[in-house]
Amino acid sequence: MACTNCRRSDLPTTPTKPRTFHFPLSSFVLIYDIIFPGPNRAGQRSQQSCFQLELSIYLSIIYPPTSSNHPLHGSPCQKNPTMRSLFLFPIIWHLALAASVRSIFLFKDVMKSNTTALKTSGFNTLIMFGVGILSNGDIMYYSNTPGSQDVRVASGGVYVGGVALAQKVRSLKTGETGVTRLEISMNAQNVRNLIVTPGPGPETPLFRNFQALKEAWTLDAVNNDDESIYDLKSSVAFGRMLGQIGYKYTIAPYTNAQFWLNVKNQLNQGLKEQDWLLDRVYLQCYDGGAYNNPPGWQTFLGMKVVPLIWVINDSKPVYGATAAQARTRLTQWHQQSTLAGGGYWNDYDIEKMGLSYWDYGNVLASIFP
Image (cartoon, rainbow, N blue to C red):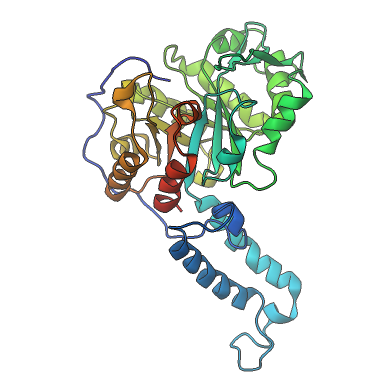
């Protein structure tokens, strides 16, 4: 992530309220454990009551009571289970698309991090940082953790990272968990050369390795954390290749807004918003991006963003934020211009500094339910 101070003078500073649409407080009907995983905790009761109210309304429509006094008694929805299912599907699908992003970047070796806490503290998106591409198209997972070793995870179109690592990564979205989306984050090293030769075709090592990794780890998206190369042609070609495999493509900028706008426009050209290939922007609001204004970036890019805040840390303490400070900043930005959600950099510091996943996760759950 960003390591140099930089302030963009060309970004808008006056926020403009983007077009929004209303959706109920609950992100998914009938999947309460995904919204509030684990036992009910203090601070969730008001949201739970709201969810129960919405649930009763939806159920009264989808599964009307048999009483002849009920408004839907005798309707096709009551008599025909198929019609009830057809009625329910667009509601759930709409809510799924509308779900706010509650994210955290995983800097620590996933084999050593507290994955139980990550799965049950309110986060719905995890981004595994430290994946890189070698000059031959092989994919590495860099542990970034003392005592851990870097692992080659895909080579020759085959997953080679080992069963234990694959099971750990896949478990992030299974069992008792609120996580519905898993991404890997990488820089642009070697991408340009590999896109030129041998290219992004389905028979190339680059394509086949990302295909194998997606299947092994049940990945949903690849995050581009390019902070130095900024090559438009190869970035777009790489993004389109990932789209052919079935990935979504996300970015994590801290500067160079015009470059990212060009990437977004080319990747999403001709697509409806719900089908966008580049569907998320994780905006760094610390270190080199400390002066970034999320509402301004939203206006400039023409899409909602997910501001990232650095938790308390001993690497660059001046940029660290407590859970309370994160709440204040996210709330202010969200009031100025509706955001896509919020997130943090990173899990390693939360564990190293003895912080609480729940404290930080609850901030996101309360602001972006």
